[in-house]
Image 1 (tube, protein in one colour):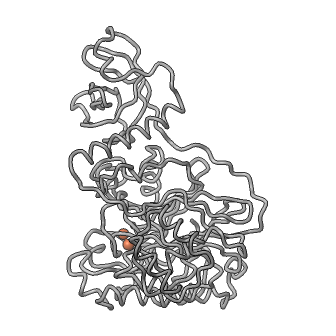
Image 2 (cartoon, protein in one colour):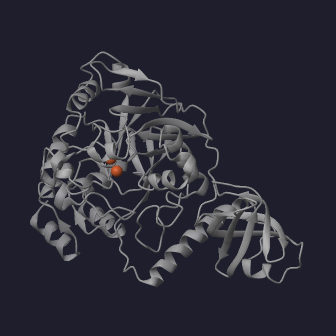
Image 3 (cartoon, helix red, strand yellow):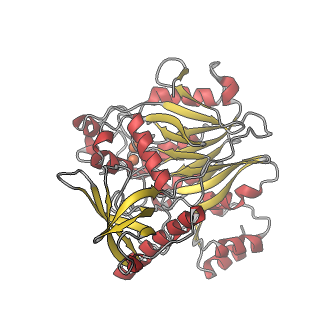
Amino acid sequence: MNQNQLDTLFLNGILVDSSIKDAEVQDFEDLLTKLKERKISFLDSGVLNALYDGEQSNSDCYVEVIKNYEGETSSGKPADWVAYFNDRFNRLRDLLLLKDNSGITSISNIKSMPQGADIKTIAMLSNISISPIKKYTVFDMEDNTGSYRGILTSQNSDLLADQVVLIKGRKFKDAVFIKDIVYPDIQVRDSKPKDIEDSYVLFLSDIHVGSKLFVKDAAELFMKWINQEVSEYSSIAKLVKFIVISGDLVDGIGVYPNQEKELEIKDLREQYEAFYKLFDRIPKNIKLLISQGNHDATHIAEPQPKLDPNFASPVYKLVNAVFLSNPYQVNLVVGSSKTNLLSYHGFSIPYYADTISKYNKMDPQDIEEIMKLHLKSRHLAPTHGSSQVVPLKRDYLVIDETPDIYATGHIHKALVSKYKETILINSSCWQYQTSYQKKYGMNPDIAKVPIVNLRDKSYMMLDFLGEKVQAVKP
Ligand SMILES: [Fe+2]
Ligand SMILES: [Fe+2]
């Protein structure tokens, strides 16, 4: 890039990383237009790669971004929270209206309706409790016109505070007795095999580079496997097109009490340098989708913007990486086929394990049920407080589109399953049990890699913890 071009970027309020100075840009005006359109104010090699990733004519595999948080900010004032909740409510209500839009009444109208009237309304739920004697589920239903009491004559652990649902019932005294609850829920995706060759996507997360407990031997075996240097399952390694890395790339600094005793690398930049050196060994024809978790160099409130280049600059040297927010939604494109992927680090999952007693063992089946709750609610953290959030005008945790694959991490458990036609994945970890996990009785699944074939959505899991690569039951 020449001095004139660098000056033009600067005059347009775009800061430039040193990694970009030697980059060759074919069409500078086009680049400038793209940067302005996407409100990008910091340009480095990672951003440049991501901008042109969908346009590489020499590759029929690329990433098409559907939803990605670009870092807009909020002042966190009460009005921002109101706008944030209104956006969430309105978008989830619109999804419910697609299922049933006849005879919907607003909450304020219920008051003037006669006793015994049939009621159909869309509401956000709050103050959910179980009545002590009859064990009824009692809650408040709210929309932007008012609030009314709802009573369900059974217990239902799928009802979550701040969830938006369609309610059918009958008015009796000062409450609506519920007959049916409709969740926004996902649709059934097309599951017909695509007209492409076998093409694989791997799911990694929670690498925790920098920890003394990082499983170096397993990572070494994985790198040999992906480079087809070991014979087991090398026919799959050869056909890998994408690797999804859903957060906790490094162990970070000061994330949990006494973490420093378990750190081998005590500098955040050096942790990312070690991550870069490891992942630079992955063949460059494989696209890496990189997003972050609570151990990484961004703020913890969600949505999290892509990795902070000030701390994670080494990772931006990975020329085959696409840097994304947490959460994000993309299409993995192979030739004429598109696979819709939703990735979320999974920070809200432990909240539901803590508050819904039947899930509190947090084994893979519990995590699967919590992931289904996310999809049924069409929200990645339905209850306010289940994760920290930035009150933006748009709630990035609403699941607008039904994904083919919903991938999480954070829990350090391995899981591949299916809900309707959507594949659920939790992608294990690359770190032995920490003192923190020991204290809370959490036993991690280590170095297990869920794999999905984009051709027919079949899946499997490979285990890299032993001497040899082995297939294990998902
Ligand atoms: Fe983690
Ligand atoms: Fe995490």
